[in-house]
Amino acid sequence: MTSTPVAPMAALLRAPPFPWLKAAQSAGLPPPLSISEGKARAALFENLCAARVGGRFWAEPSSLAQPPEMILRPRSIAEISELAPDAGTHALWVARDPAVHSALQDLARQSAVQWVADADPWSVLVGAGGLVAHGDDEWVALARVAGVPVRVLSSGQFGAPGDGEEALDRRAAQALSIPMPDPFGEGWLSSRDAIALLAEWRRVIDANRGRKGEAIIAVCGMAWWKRSEIRRFLWVPDEHLRIISSPRKALAIAAAQGGAVAVWPSRVSPTLISEAQAKGVPLVRIEDGFVRSVGLGSNLVPPASIVVDRQGIHFTPARQATLRRSSRRPISHPNFASEREDWAKRLWQLGSANTPREEARTKLRPNALPIAG
Image (cartoon, rainbow, N blue to C red; front, side, top):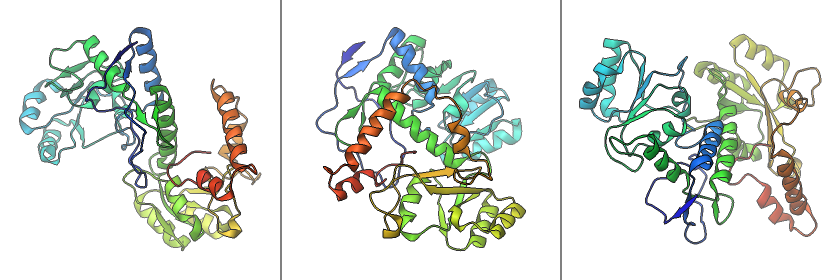
């Protein structure tokens, strides 16, 4: 590994745009970049691919049945005209700029090609035949991490026209070496720690979004003092979670938008279950998690964690539950034992007599970021 001064390059590892998250206040300047090379770089790229994080990984995933032969990221109508003859019909065009959307719509009508305004890069890059993009486009770096050939249209921080794989890989590794501010305190996260944290956030976002037709659209049966935390636990980018008192209204909204309703199990009636089945609306059960608040719900203390189960709930033996099924599987994660021990010590310290009650409550409540229990 080599150390170099911090370069003015955009970071690939960054937090999703949680609406309640304030910019992390890290102490001092970030450490010098430590850019991975050789086997260390290969391991870093493999780790990132497995986690599927980096860039705007929280964007809506593509619905493509198979990876595209080519991905094109044009920025002007002239570029679309220039690239279209060689793109083929199995290409995917991706352009966030509304100014070129009409041209892509015309191209789709003429050639039956597919295009999207935006997409989770990992939902299309893995397995793609190639990428055509500008050098300041972070998809160039992500494509190289995924082992996808890249053609660079113009010079930028992630590549330049004519750059070979080694040059592009080196720039991608440099972008990944930029430390991420620690969102839970002061300081900076290493690439390894940042990837682990972002992977957990991705898992939560993907679980909340669910498969097609399973996104949680509305919540009902939720006590008012829990609603702020529930919004954070169930957050999905670009989705407005409706918290509604009326079960019938919640079902109607979810049915109209093609999504699910989250409910508190004690508030679920046989009538609600029957009406949800009749409308084809999935019900998602929510209950307090195992990382408990310092205080009781009867005292209007919101939860510090929740269990979200799309099959049932763990304390109802008559129904299958995801948590019970998962608990029967052997744990294969190599870091689980040490992480479990660290969390146990942390929770013990926060709940001990040496920790003021208000301080423990502040640290355990999800007042900054979602943490899956």
